Amino acid sequence: MTARVLVLYYSRHGSVAALAEKIAHGVQQAGAEAWLRSIPGFNDRETTRHPPVTQAELTACDGLAFGSPVRFGNMAAEAKAFWDSTTACWLKGELINKAAGVFTSSGSLHGGNEANLLSMMLPLLHHGMVLMGVPYSEPELHKTQSGGTPYGPSHVSGLQQDNQLSVDEQRLALAFGKRLALLSASLKQQGFSD
Image 1: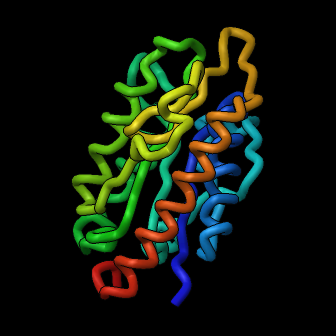
Image 2: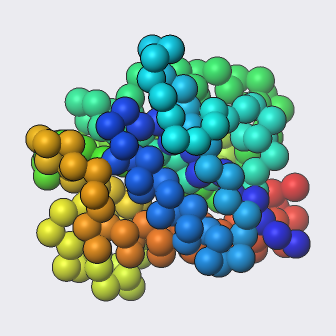
């Protein structure tokens, strides 16, 4: 019984997309199926690396990794607008008991990564999802000098918008993807996320 994990993100400069790709790789390493999907921007000229998500994909997933850049300590408006469009899914309880976690990127070390990750959890909690983060058993969480939090993977791009992930950020994103895949499969196997 293979778990299907939706790695869903909005990314403007590529940092969040880079994290999403590493998380998806971790999902696959754990033997689950990774669906890498984007949230479209408000501007039609914005291009994305991955296809836009559909509501059907959201409701069919067994687990969800949700990513957005930091905008003044919160998720991007595009990501918020996506969740605002999921009322029908919420009314039907289609995400209840499915595993979920969040990831982000900011332009500076104190750019609001942790505040954003915590605020990104709110719609997932309203949908009844089972949240997870990154445990301190991951050695990179103790030594990272850039991104990485117990609330979820993160990246610090700096003012130059460098979307090259550090080694620690990459390892934390992979570990997060593996953990999410295993939790998603476990909940599915036990009948919690049918």
